Amino acid sequence: MDIQIKRGLLDVCVLAAIKNADSYGYQIIKDMSPYISISESTLYPILRRLEASQMLTVYSVEHNGRLRKYYSITDSGRKRIADFAEEWKQIISVYEFITKEGNGDD
Image 1 (cartoon, rainbow, N blue to C red):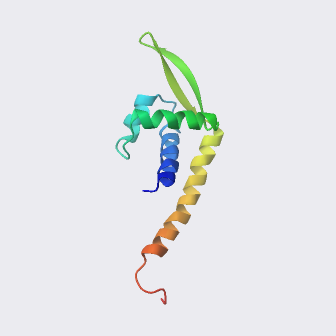
Image 2: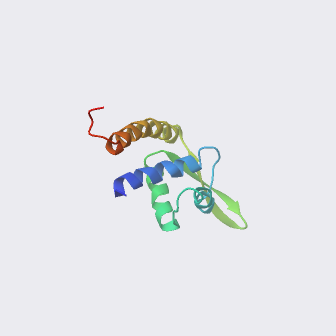
């Protein structure tokens, strides 16, 4: 898969993983695992990039004597998910054109 397409998909997948509730890294990986495989070394740069682009915010909570970073989606992040859903409709249309049978004289 093209690296830019995959990068965009992973960004939206991470946003989708936290759209209903704030979460932390390990839980995000666990929530995504039935759908897509992602490692910690891939996730954390995505989280930093999404924070830098103001699509999520970060805060810390003490858990078992340690601080755990939680990630919360912003309105900008929710808009990115909505934009992606619209873009995906166009991608499906292009896919159907590319894979359709026949010579185009239908």
